[in-house]
Image: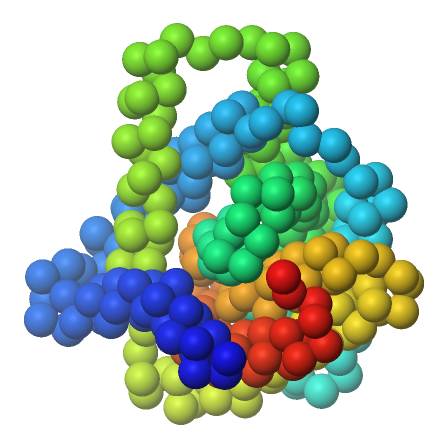
Length: 317
């Protein structure tokens, strides 16, 4: 089971690792430059990723039943973990300018891509239906929390800082895309097929373009100099998040399916969008890229171990 899990994990994260390396390689041979990375990152943050989220919501199955207690638990657990890593970061990391990037890297999972891929492989369509609802809610939460932690490192959160924070949240393209998707879905507004097809072209650009930019920014020398920050964030993401949140769900008495879904959602590596948001909001983009690369590679091992443990206790069909 372990080697099967490891093989599956690599089939999911392998293409992501290859795209990261390709971005790194293309930047080193000067095929792409900083200007390309900057403009492409803005394109992802302001256009392609909001389009992907919008289309994912309006194309979702409206007949799926929402387990409100499960969704509420997931949101509360993620908020509690966000507060936990924020407190730990302020306690142990002296480099205050990087706190926002470290915190975001430690709590923000790649649920929409890698998390759902794990769920689909293990649980099939029934698992994906519930997971998609979870992803929709947590995506909004992740983006709000990311804006909070990245904004708080750039300015003091007094009255002026609070206004800046609320303005950042209101203007965030990812949150706008999600809210528009919910509005269109709720009101049953139909999009013309030609617009959906065009939007899908943009949506399909998101992951490869974001990962190429992430890889292009990856600096091995920076990885050594930012080693403490990178590993601090990675330990929270790969070990503490899945252990604490999945363990809490087990103690709370959720079903095996729901516990398994929470594990996959929290054990997924740091989302590629965290790099795009850090770069767009003036954070340490190199550190964000290093955290993504480290957690993506490390998740091959941690996810496989978690799958093996849960399988041993019959959490999977």
